[in-house]
Image 1: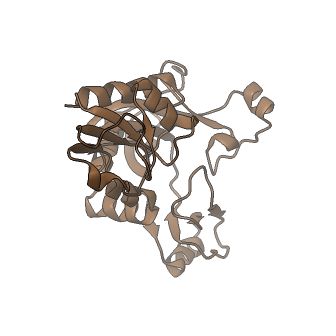
Image 2 (image 1 turned 90 degrees about the vertical axis):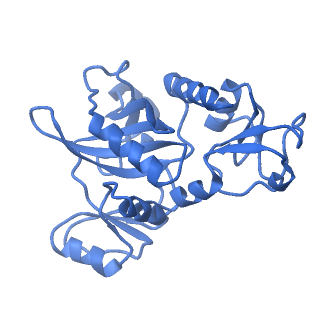
Image 3 (image 1 turned 60 degrees about the vertical axis):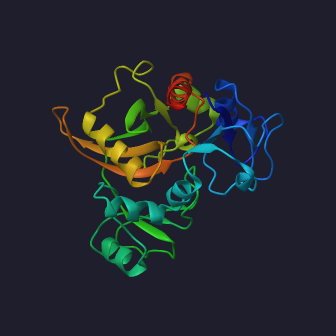
Length: 273
C-alpha cells in the first residue's frame, strides 16, 4: 500500500482535515513542506482535503497518486465555474447568472434572488437575499430562488454514495444555548440548522436515489474523486421526490460526525493500491 499523506491548507491540529489524517493514521502536510519521515523516493497517495494550490514539493516526487486533484478543487471552489461545469455536463443545478441586469429582471418579475458577493466563500459569507421588486446589489454571482422542500449533503467517493445527511432545524434547547436565531433563507449552522443522519433523526429523514444520482453526476462533472454535494429537492405531498438540483460542492466537507468520517476513511483505504 502507498504511504498516505493528507494535503491541506494548514498542518495545525484542528478541524476536519486533522480528523481525517488521524483516522487514516497518516501525517498531514501543506504546500511548502512534506512531513518528516516521508521520502521523495517512495510512492505516496496524496489525499487532498480542499487545497487548490499545487504542492511546491511535487516535482521532487518519483511516484504518487492524488485523490482530489488541485485543478478539480480550483474548479469547485469558484461557484461560477462550478455551475458552468454542471451545466456543460447536463447536471441539474440552481439557475444562475453573472449579469446584474438578468438578476434584476428576475426580481422585477416577482422572484427572490440570491446575490453572492464572494464566489469562493463558505458558511453563508457574502450571501444577500434580495426581495422581489427591489434593487439587486453588485455581486459576482446571482442564483434564482429555489423553493426547496429538503436539503441533503450527499457524500460521494469515486462514483458511489458513501454517506447521506439531511439538513434539519436544531433542537430549541440547543438553539437557545448557542444564542442562535432561526433563518429559513440561509440555512446554515449559525442560523439554527444542522446536517443530521437517518439514525439521529429517523422521523424527519427521507431520501431518494434521484438525489444520490444528481450528486454522483456532479462529482464526476467537476472531476473530483470525492465531494460533499449539497442537493436541494422538491417533494410531493404524498412523499415522492419530484426533482433535485445541486446547490454547492464541498471539497473539504465537515467530518465532525463520526459516521461520515468513518465512511471517508473506509473508502480512501479501500481505494489505495
